[in-house]
Image 1: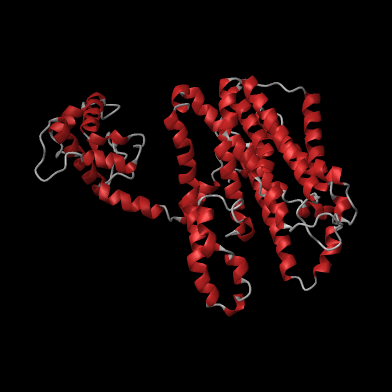
Image 2 (image 1 turned 90 degrees about the vertical axis):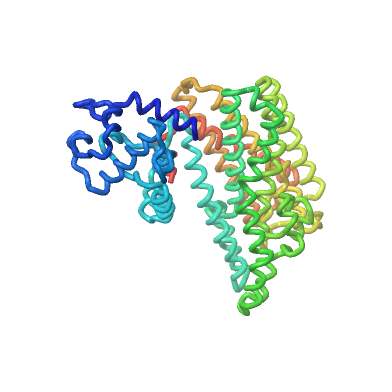
Length: 472
């Protein structure tokens, strides 16, 4: 507080109250009680504002002259300035907007937090700062809509009178967009990798020694846990201790309760440790929380790539290539060992390998929820974020190369999404192609997303469209 008072005193000694008459602040403070419009440069203000301004002058006088006023807190003016945040322009000419006693300002600010108008304006204000990765907003919105759409159609299976009615739908060509909505989840893993790498290398450029210190690595994990855990833990607590009570009181939900609650009363602690996709995965609490668990596990091992990239790009890319190879091998061996299908769908009419005799939950554990299978798309995001942050120079992309890049990107996306059309129609897919699809479809999806962001970031892909209109 003493330091703030000294700074204020020094600043006010060099400020001039008026632009035209330019009286010194000292002359104003000598007789703060003599207040008229001339002190404010001829600006007419209300009596309430005059009163507030007089209080500020008196408080400032007591600080500068070191003569406390009986019954006053000498830090009163500090509280006023702190309450309004950053004083607006013309504060010394009588602009007292939001100025007032600290006790008055805080409740007002708290009330504004619930203002429909204020929050609507804030949410709808599309801000895209220079250097920001604007295309991420487009990918995030598109993927979220895709996820919701896929789950809406999936919910129909549980309320349909006849599951066989689904067969004509899944044989439709465009229905592959719904059947393969799983790749929208990979988009979020990709975004996580991009943002992690982009922000981490930004801090590394500012202070390499501090970022690479042991304490920084501790905070690397603490920050992530503190950021994700509170809302996540609240949801798990609700499903564990609150929802069961309402299920018992709602007869219409009897029979549905188990699917909603799952094994939360017994396995909630597994969710708290972000291990729900590994430990007792057949009895998961709040099944959709597998994503947070997988994302956290990948995040924990992300420094395996970040540190080599920070040491040397060559070492970093070598480590990345090795991890790509290991993930692909794991995918291929898993599909071959269990004779698994190319995706987790189990609709009537789909041809199932007769040697695929294990429980369908094996696919969830070994492929769908597995961090070592999801890692490639996350890794592509890390590499892209590293490049965008370390190469801030203008990149020139020839028109032919740009067109080819976009064409190849869309071709890979369409192949990944519609490549299983024959399989969804009832055709058999050889084991080799099932393994190849599982091993490289996510990598192809990640590379396609990487080109979209890369091209848009450097101004070759409609930056205005894919960033501004999706920021909100």
